[in-house]
Length: 246
Image (cartoon, rainbow, N blue to C red; front, side, top):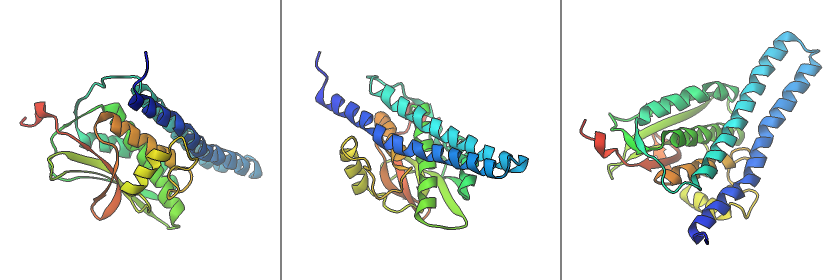
């Protein structure tokens, strides 16, 4: 049986992410290598070891997070029907903020959660939404720290109801170069270019593209958006009709 061209193209894009993923996974490995060198130079001083151990552990967790999200995107390409269920967006954003908090501290980043109004539960695949926002958040944490040197950074996990009566949920920061045009270009370049998102600093591209594919598997891919005067990327999710009037 021949594969549908559209499905085959989607699989090629997911497989094409490997190049960008390899580059992004090099970052945590370099952080681990640097940490071990510092420990060795300090003569295995206990205080140095403890501080570097935490950084290395978080780097490992972040690398595994990317791999797990990539595997999820691969698995969805083999599934015809994804099981969607009512999900509380605010609860997902809080979980992601908690998950990213320790990693954000490495980059002097403060994470905020802002849910505008009382939002009705949405219809989504919760593991995918959680994974998408997590890898997107960690990618933007690294990207804004690489783009501009500051003492402190801010990352906002936000959600609000749009004029079309759907919920927009995403991650917002001071990262430059994230536009709908850049995303469209990146989607076309996946599997063809080593850096499909050249405007984003190295170490962040694959997380953004994996998040984009996970969101597209549910409802809508990522789009450039704004929330509380910050720019970022968000996906739109329909309201769960079963719980709309509860």
